[in-house]
Image (cartoon, rainbow, N blue to C red; front, top):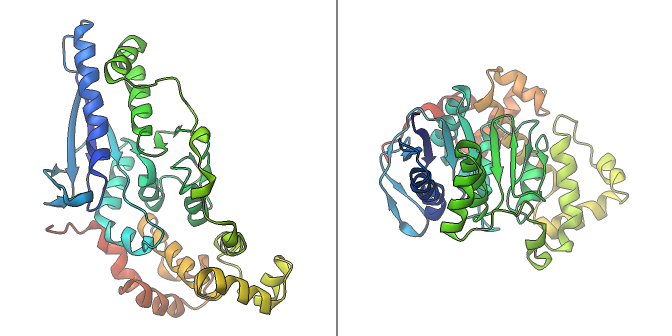
Length: 327
């Protein structure tokens, strides 16, 4: 039996531990499988990137190989502090998102670790699928990608060939399930014992710390942003939006501004550009159609806002993910 090819997609700022966690556990599983009589190596692992050089979290420099065909592609997570500009971060990872899309199109099973789910969602892989991520960021992912069916109580979720996991240690829960499916319960149980891992847990609910969740003081703005995300194509009507939340327009602007430092309209423009970026990467729709999809009757309005937010014309941005940078 040929070894299963498992590639880990490294990228700037990814957690180095999440790059090596799954390959290391699969290495252990390979030894356990050999001890049980498997004549050939069980797994062939590699760390790949569309870039020549990758510096991971903490300044760790990674040796990477070129992106290659694989049976499984693992996408690690990255640091996601509250102040991080997620739009800018994902925009810089265009080559990696393109690689994820190419692997999925080729039939590769794709797996994300923790907030690596944001890259899968940006690549269009989680559209209409069940998914999970760290409980700390699940609401943020659900708000940003309302077409994802969040199962934030679970540690590992697989839906039609796409797997997402909860935070950090959930990569081992995934890896053990993966070993169980590939080499059977005997090898999986042996690997869990060698690595001192609990192979019986399935939910992240017991780990939730409500003190670390977004403060209740932001509940109002979160609700408004969620509504705007889910109604991007709807004409912006401030009185109607205020009525939706049972407040006056003045109260809406005051409360939203106090919690976010901006207006609902400013947020809506950002959300529309974000959605347009996603559609430019994942579809072949004309720019004019995408403009209408996100709520702009005049494509020129989208172009102006897109340039302001990304520094690129929409048509130039569509071509960007296929470019392979030199570092």
